[in-house]
Image 1: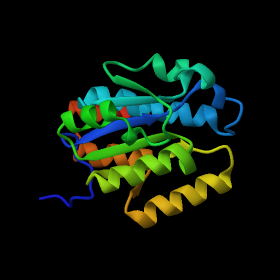
Image 2: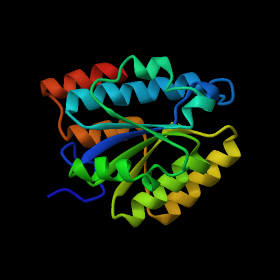
Image 3: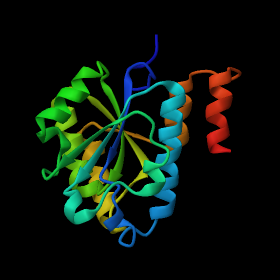
Image 4: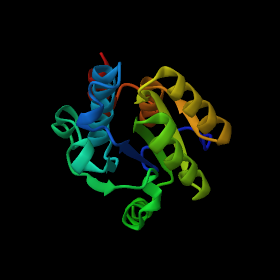
Length: 184
């Protein structure tokens, strides 16, 4: 029996929040952010995990960036104007329909849309896992404060590799080798 705060590929979903074109110049570590999210997307395909994507007011902020869009396989996308995607009925229904309770949270901005989504996920009895290097804000201060608040409220901090190895559980399998290639 594994600890409930360890990720389980059959109980997890990847959530990508608002990684849109207008943030490209505003986020200092944007290239690293999109690389890490792309790795998570590719790993999700290997591990057969659902992927949910949101876009905040895409008419004004643009669409999901091309480097992430290019590696997305099957996924569901939700346009929104609410900061928390959980305020949208169609998003909540899609998340519930996965029958999974762990949510790997990635995206922009850690102190606004991510923060409010994570708090709503917690109130809905989901277990949000924050992939720290796959989260960003326009300023480091805002990202740090957002992370502190979410973690203090019960979100589970994680790193890209920590999350992937928890999902894999063991080495030596073909699945392990496929995912390992993504991070080498």
